[in-house]
Amino acid sequence: MMADTKITPEEPKSWLLDHREALPTGERVTLTPEQARARKRRGQWMALALFAFCILIFLITMTKMGASILMGAT
Image 1 (cartoon, rainbow, N blue to C red):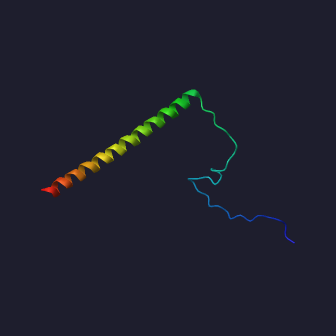
Image 2 (cartoon, one colour):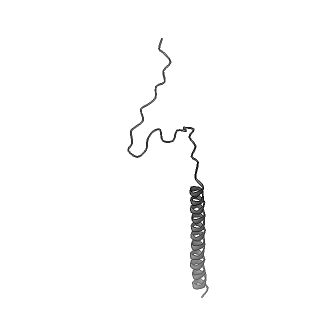
Image 3 (cartoon, one colour):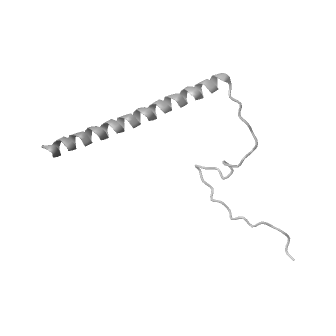
């Protein structure tokens, strides 16, 4: 009788990703107060950039719709 062995397919080796990269290790990263402030500031700028992008898309859409309504009304 064969011993209990798990046969796992060999994962391809990639120069981009390590096959162990996403495995939980139990390690925790503790940020310094300076790093935490930098992360918060970065997040706030990203939120502001996303908001500005949404407003820009809204304004462009409204401008194009308004122009097409005016052209069709004459």
